[in-house]
Amino acid sequence: MWVTCALGPYNFEFMTEVHREILRLYKVEGIFTNRWAGSGMCYCENCQTNFRAASGMDLPRTNDPQHPARRSYILWRQQRLFDLWRLWDSEISKINPDARYIANAGGGATSELDMKTIGEMAPTLFADRQARRGLMPPWFNGKNGKEYRATLGRKAIVGIFSVGVEEPYRWKDSVQSDAEIRVWVAEGVANGLRPWFTKFGGTLYDRRWLKPVEEIYGWHYRNERYLRNEEPLARVAMVYSQQTATFYGGEQARAKVEDHTLGFYHALIEARIPFEMVHDGLLDGTHVDRFKTLVLPNIAALSETQCRQLAEYVRRGGSIVATHETSLYDEWGVRRNDLGLADLFGARFKGRIEGPMQNSYLRLDHPHPILRGLEDAPRIINGVRRVDAEPITKPAHNPITLIPSYPDLPMEEVYPRIEKTDIPEVFLREYGRARVVWFPWDIDRTFWEVMSPDHGKLLVNAVEWATDEERPVMVAGPGLIDVTVWRQKESLAVHLVNLSNPMMMKGPYREAIPVGEQRVRLRLPPGRKARAVHLLVSGAEPRVEESGGVLSLPVPSIAIHEVIAIDLA
Image (cartoon, rainbow, N blue to C red; front, side, top):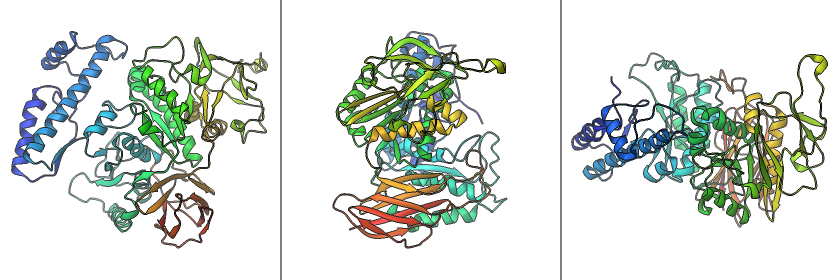
């Protein structure tokens, strides 16, 4: 009924006593709270007094993260909420040591609370992304799982899904289509989320959701042993950065930060490359050395320590693919005089960010593996913004160079003023087993906006060249398929989620549209053989060939989701 101040005595005193009362009266396993962090900026007397005591400043009247008061407020509010979280968890545990407090919090780069700290504190976490809205592909639910697991590790994580229509109009007594419910849950399950459905209110006005939800849970129960995942086997990981979103992106974080991630994410999905996500607060060897390649989609704000961790990762043999302004700013979003990763990229910042550019192009100088699939293209479209940079050492070969913008109207003026330059638009370096790729332009963000297949090929080729090893699983066949691969104690599971649907980029699905045969090639763990292979959705027993530690099999068709389960001997 009311939204109170989250940072004052209502939460710290009154709600603490409410929690104590609940625990004294009922044998609950925990308390999960929604809207616990308030709603927007608060200027109540408690916030004014407490913020001044902590910072010596008045509450900010600006959202500019470079303003000293705003920066201090962001950090103070976050600390205050974590103090509240710890208080409630402590008081709940005092009464029932087996019960915990769980906040509705967390997410990706634009999440308000630090996911690294949440990962340390939370016994489990609920991804409250109940359904699609707007221009959102189904793989967003899988992205939720990857982001949560990046900091929670093997702790159980939950994907809340709703049978009703979500934001912005919240028709909570409505029902999603059967296929829409199934694809959203399949993406979550394929990426490690436990499904948890929500129904608002106890009256069933529309019963169409009952059958798909019942069948989802029945399938999950029957195949649970192949869903108790020990670890993903992906060798590629994408970094996400909350400090970049907060202090570099600010109010434009979705366009300046998240759109880069979404573009690169979609390119990897299209290429069927299994990949994970890594939080930029966990760039130490323990968290990143299991990956051969780290992708940095415009991770603009990096501290000196983080830059050093990335350099050490490369020295240990890890590869990097980065885009646009990566490392050009410190952790507070303040621009450096040069790239923090200048030596790694082999590039020097010339002091200018160009853009928005119009009618600019890229000249392709074949051959190079990064240009695979573009052999018949002498040039392709450029992005919209670029970092003006020059190589520290002149390369022997520039596979991609700049064709500067020229008029696009009137028609008589549409011709390039400069047809060829030696300005590189990709920087390629090799350090022993490690390879580094830096695109100084917004290739991933532009790909998300205009979906040029040429940009998608460049992004994927960069990852393939940098990784320079066979994927853990190869899937060939028609359609758009999200591929994940997991290890359980005595089995492997390959999830194939069929995203091939005219409603993929804007739901809901009208129907499941099956794709044809997929050829799957999977590397088995050293010294292990396949004892049995099952298709968990169709129930079919596939024709399997095993040779030299590699398993090959066809999957005849996929409607929405198929799982290849391999029992190991």
